[in-house]
Structure formats: C-alpha cells, structure tokens
Amino acid sequence: MLYCNKKRCKCGGRRMRMEIHEVLSELDSLFREKKTEQVEGFLHEKLKEAITEEDTACMITLLNELIGYYRDMSRYDRGVLYAERLVALMNDAGLTGTVYYATTLLNVANLYRAAGKLSESLECYETVCKIYDGELDRNDLKYASLYNNMSLLYEELAVQDVHWYDAAGEALKAALSIVSANPEYRIEEATTHANLAAVLMKQGKEEDAYREAQSALFIFEQDEEKDFHYSMALSAMADILYHKKDYEQAASFYEKALEEIDSNVGRSEGYYRVLSNLHQAYARAGKADCLKGLSLAREYYETYGRAMIHESFAEFEGKIAVGFVGEGSDCFGYDDLTSMDHDFGPAFCMWVTEETFEQIGSCLQEAYERLPKYLHGIRRDIRPMGQGRTGVIIISDFYHKYTGCPNGPESESDWIHTDECRLAASVNGEVFTDPEGIFTSIRQKILSYYPQNVWKRKMAQKLALMAQSGQYNYARLMGRGDAVSAQFARNQFVRETLEFLYLINRRYAPYYKWLFRGSENFEHLSGVIGQLIELQLLPVQTDAWEGRQGEWNFGVNQKDRAVALIEKIAESTVQTCRELNLTNIPDTYLETQAFTILKS
Image 1 (spheres, rainbow, N blue to C red):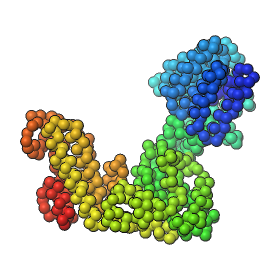
Image 2: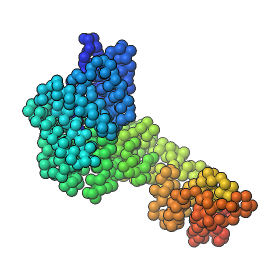
Image 3: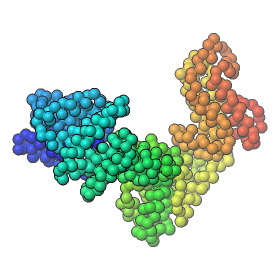
Image 4: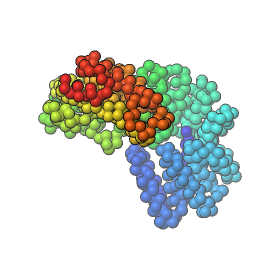
C-alpha cells in the first residue's frame, strides 16, 4: 500500500489557484459520495479546459489525478499513456530536477509498479531519490512516502529474488523513523506499520508481522473517518490470521477490508484479490457456501429484512412472500467467484398481490433500499440490465415476465411457446416465506412440469433435431470436406442432446451456458454426460475422412470418433426411452423414435 503527500499541485496565478482548488474539491466530493463512475469523465472534461487555456500547472495536476485514478481502477494501459504525456509535459515546462518533478515522477513510478513495469518503476524511484537527496531534509515526509512506495516495488522484485525482502524491510524502517517522530503523521505511521507487517509475513516472521498489523489498526481506528489505507491494514491482519489457521477471524478482517476498498475506490484489482482470499478463508473454515448468492439472500433477509417487515409493515406481514428466484447464476446456485463481478450481492425478493402493492408497494421498496448495503463485506452491484430483479415485485408481473402469463402457463399453447430457460428461471432459487401461498401455488404448478402431451411433443422435437444434426448432417458434411459446417452440426447435436436429457429427467433446461453445469445428478442417461463432454472437446476428425470424399453413401464411419460417440449416445437414448415405455422400437435412428413417441 502507499500513501501520498496530500498537498496537491496548486501552482500558477491566483485565478488558476482558485480554479484548481475548486476542481479538486469537486473531485473529492465525487469520491466521498461514492460516485467513482463519474470521476473519469469529470477529469477529462477539466483536462480539456486546461489544455484550451494552455494552463500547464492545471494540466499537470489533472494528469496526476488521472494516473492515480487509472492505477486504482487497475486500468494500467490508460494510466501508462497519460504518464508518458505527463513526463513529457513537465520536461517541456523545464521542471526536470525540481522537487515538484520528483513528486510527480513518484506517482508515475507507482503506476509502473502496479502495471508490472518493474524496471521502469525502479528507474523512476531512483531518480526521485537523487532529486530528494539534493533538495530535501532527510526527515521530510516526502522521504517516508518514497520509502513506503519503494518497499512495494522491492516486494514485487522479491518474487524472483527473496533478498529484495530485506531491502523492503529496511526501506519501511527508514520511513517509520520519519513518520513516528511527528504526531501529525499518524495515518502515515499506520500505513507504514501495515506495509511492514506484509513484508515480515513474507519473510516468515509471523509474530513480528502480527504486532505491526496490530499497531497499524490501533492507529487507524482512532480516526472516525478512515483513510483508504485502512483497508490494506485490515487485509494484512487477515493474511496473518489466515496463516495462523484462524480462518473465521481472517474472514472477518477480509470482509471489513472489502467494504473499505469498495467504499473508497470501487471494485479494483485489489478488491477482487481480497475477495478471492475471503473465499479461501471461508472454504478452509468449512463455510464455502456462505458467500453463495442464495445463502447471502437468505441471511440478508433473516438479518435485516424480516425485522424490517415485522416492525414497519406488521399489518401486511402475512401478505408478503419473500425469497430469491429469477435470472442469474446465483438464483440457480451456479455462482462462483467469477459471478461476483456483476449483478451480485445481498438482496431478496418480496412478492405481493396488486392490491397489496397499491397499499404499501412504494413504502416497502423504500424501506428495502434503506437496509444496510453490505453483508460479509459484499455490496450488491447491479447493472442497468439487472434492475427490477429484487425488491418489491407484483406476483402477476413476475410470472408474466417469465412465462408470458400472469398465473403461469394455462393452455398447451402457453406451455409450448414459453421458452424453457424462462420456465427454469421462474422456479429456481428458494422461497423463504409465503404466508398467503399465492406465489408458491403458481410455482408448484410450474414445478409439476409439462402436461404429458407437451412433454412428449418436446421430446420428439429434440430427438428429430438430434438425428438431423448428429446422425445425418455431421457425417454428410465431413464427407463433403466441409469440416467447419460439420462442427456446427456436432455442436448442435451436443446442445439438443443436453436439452433432451433435461426433458427426459423432467427438469427445465436453463440458459445454454449453464446446461452442463445443471446436468449433475440426472436420474436418466447420466452416463451420456461424459460422452457429450468428450464429443464437444474432440479435435476435428479430418483424417478419418481421407479418401471418402465424393462417396454416395457415407455409412457409419467408425474411424471418426465423433460419429462413434453420436451412435453410442443414440443407442443409450433409445434404450432409456424403451425402459420408460416411451417406445417399443429398437431402431437407433432417432428420427424414427421421434415419430413413435409422437404417436404414442
């Protein structure tokens, strides 16, 4: 972690000093109000104004801010581009060799370090050090900032050569000797203690690291308004506790660190690194599922939602169904660490009738939005496309959204024309409470699955498409030498077969990217899954068709592993259909079976 001298550049004439002061004040407000998504546009707008006015001092200040922003957001390519512009601008302005130049170069060095440009970063730090040696007193705070940041680079270099850890430790001790001598530098002292704790841990000095982390946290926690670097001290303590195998305590500190990072800089690379550590801590503690979306939803409701409804809407408590159902991998239980970058976090749904919504809908939604934003250090992050999935929802609107019918599918036509993945989304997740039972009654009707005639019709359709794509078109296309189109046919066969497996197991198939993920624990044809995986991942079987181009009847080319797998899958499919009394014909050509099932 790093800290910087908070006296930003405010040079130039009096008019410009006042303007840049106002700009920086507005910028601070954006960060304070958690409007980080507006920062980039704001800085670019002000930079254009400074360029138009040919105000070099303001341009330098704004470029410095942009570099820091891109570093914090892990957008290193953009940061490097502006760093190069900034250094060139300062050289052209004749500022080379000044303390002002050095402090700017320190910012550039920090960016290079974060971007993995370690040699460039080291060169910049060494230049800064030379300028400071010629211009500053050795106890100047700028030295402490330099040493802290250089220690981070040394830690990166230590990945290749552990002796750099010694250099990192010495740099931090030098910084500590400066900041600890002045009470005004308490936050800088805390930051240095936290940095030193991280280095000591990497050197295997666990107890020393623990003491340094405690010192850092003690200082940070004296302030009501925490500095950004507080999150790094929390993370350092979490790392130490994890190493001590105190996984639940480690998780607690990782959670606090996540909330601080998210509140101050948003979801940067550092945020996801700590989030990954939190996952590992809970896994080691035997609580791997507590960060799953469905678990978060249930705990969020039990911790905050239940009391909110009981205390503020007691009269309507028996009219509010609560749960977590709908779109998203978290509702299906398929979410993982990768899922947490969008539309994820603590939330739940409250389903009510139109009548209840007219009475309390708006007030209930407002109360929901006032609930604490974080649980286990995680805040729900919703894109515009994800709006309306949680909170207060009218029951009929929910089912109309997913099935096209306010009470779920009624007629055979409704069932046939509703996308299966929408049906899957309408009955996934969990209902935590439903006093009236209205929401659940429709849910149970859909869970009862397709009417028999619709079910058979859909299976017949899938069997026909499996035959067309796999047993017919794949071989013909390979025989013609059109391997590209043959792979289209093979892929379609895999997808149609997977969707058939859902049908024969009476489960709704989810969105295509979760078809494999959701195919675990099938009762029927589970052995086919491994064959489908092999088929999907096979290399192109061109060699198996050498010398066969132009043949009138390709037959079953068993030299092609894909053909062999398709036939094995067809045999297993027919055998299972016979066992379930869906057909009594042994023919393994699946189109024949499709017509048989339709007539049954």
